[in-house]
Length: 98
Image (cartoon, rainbow, N blue to C red; front, side, top):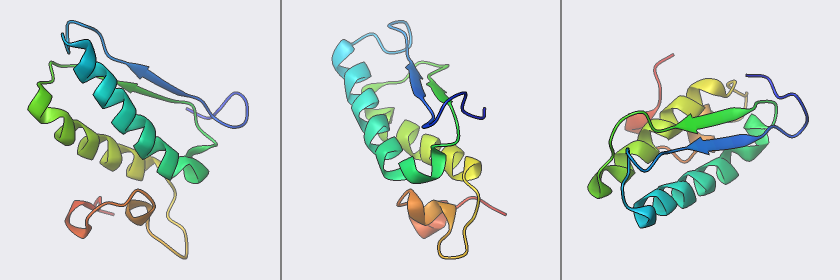
């Protein structure tokens, strides 16, 4: 969604039913914040809500981060100098199809 104010805001929604351990929820939140920080110049025009919709086990946190990177890469417009995936430090195999 386009940001109501500049810069855009980021929200994280992850309930205790989806991730019962607070330490795991906090770890995922920290990893998502770092990913957003690296993508920040490109997403300042948007309000973004990152929501965990299914149960996530501790060993799946990396998969959640990879999926969030792909979704954010789809949100960012391609620039002349770099692809959206490079701004999020994605490996070449994980770049979204265009």
